Image: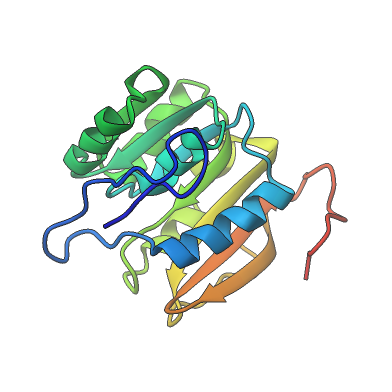
Length: 194
């Protein structure tokens, strides 16, 4: 079962998936991911976008750790909604039940800007490549925003996607996290860059 691992909702057990439709991020991987985020991309007052949200675990973890708001996108948003209510975060969240392309275009039209964008598409489907190259994604990023993609160890991490810079990649078990920033990022000499 997924759970919140730190912050104001620490140890809260979230509703998990039944069957194989949703693949939650494991606690150990999530803990390692958030150690990196805390060190490099602080969550205080952050604006979060969780694409392919599933259980909502990643976005809810961000809110528990001090993010200002989170928007969740998924074709089936029911599990995310259930966990938002469980965390009592309804007033600082928005859910969009939609295809990722339509949702990104909608957010771009609304002139939304996010500081942290999490992508967790189904593994080995080619969706990651399509999303990371999509200009609507770039247009909803601020100058110091970060995109964090969760991939399978079998996926090829794009080194130079359009207008983004790969700053780090980390493997934990069967998953890989890839971190991207805009080419115009104000501090490209950040620690830990490889």
